[in-house]
Image (cartoon, rainbow, N blue to C red; front, side, top):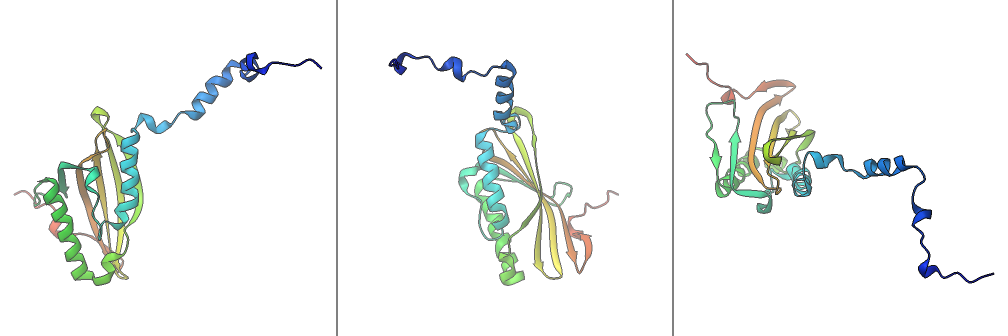
Length: 186
C-alpha cells in the first residue's frame, strides 16, 4: 500500500456540500432571528430584567444597566404624576415603594412578581422597548397587575422605565386604582 502524505492533501472538495442550496439553508439555520430586533448588549439587559424583575420589590436593578439620566414615567395616562429623571431619584422611588410595601404587607412583600407576558419591539435608532405584564399576589385576597415598559438603547442601557395599567384584584373584584384614573376635563 503506498504511503499518502496527508499534509499536502486537500480535504476541501470532500467537505464541500454537493448541493449549493445546502450552504444557503445552513446559513439560514445559523442566523439568529433576534439580530433584527436587538443586539447582544440589549439581549443581555433583557436577560437581566427577566431574572431580576420578579425580585424588584425587595432588590434594586443594577446600576450597570441603568442610564444616569433614567426617566421614570408612572402611569402616563394619569395627569397626577410627573416624569421623574435621574438615577438617584429612580432608586429612591423604588426603595420607598419597597419600604411601603413591606410595612403594609409584611413578609408578603418578598413574594416574587410573576411575569405573565413579555414582548419586545423595535424603536428608532436601533432602540428596543421591552414590555412585561406582571402580576403580584400580596395576600390570598389581594393581587395587583401592571405593565412595565423598559426602553433600552443599542448599548443595552435602560433610559426610560414606564409603569402603566395598574389594577387591583381584591377578592376576585378587579378594579382600576381610583387615584390613577384621569380626572374628567370640565
